[in-house]
Image 1 (tube, rainbow, N blue to C red):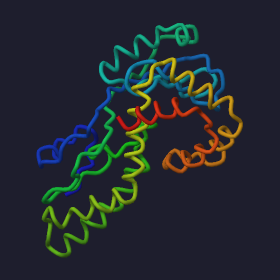
Image 2 (image 1 turned 120 degrees about the vertical axis):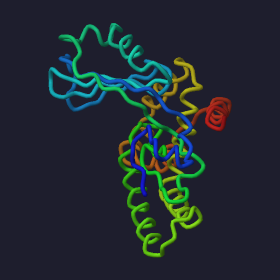
Image 3 (image 1 turned 120 degrees about the horizontal axis):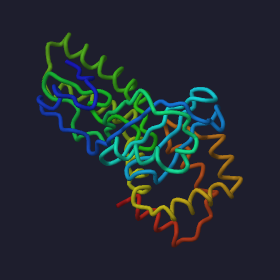
Length: 247
């Protein structure tokens, strides 16, 4: 059996697959909104502890506004909607509230006897962006192959199905781990430090070009390797960033 139940994953938990390391509280509304640029998604760091807030244009006068936080997603979204930056651009009451959990950090094992966990059920979500389609599809393809082979062999033991764990981690595991390190780093930084980092990147044409040329939301490690030669920060600042990342 393959569990693709989403973040709740009741069958996977009952079967013995642990929950992801972190589950954020997400909330989003759709509202009439004064959109500044319909081609760009707004990302607001520091709107709430956890991940970030966003504004996704649905045209020139409508948008989806949401955030993911460590807790109380709805309450924190309500506060974000009341902030000057957002409140002044709202053109009516928010509609179509959606809530849910966002799991980061896969458990030690995503395969047990008779069952594999895929996608949100296995915490296969990118901690840098909250996206799970790419890693989930990669893992689902591997899970289908392993499950089919195991069924033909008549062997659904944990040892046989552990091949799934090995293969999906080989394919996307390192990217998710790098994402977790970046997530921890950003959450340990103060707002002033985040502003300094973003301002520094914005002031370096070489860094901007690297992001434009090599940016890959599904494989952030490739971009990081390209950015390093252009950082040029002093040793103390770099050491501090590494300390945040490594915990």
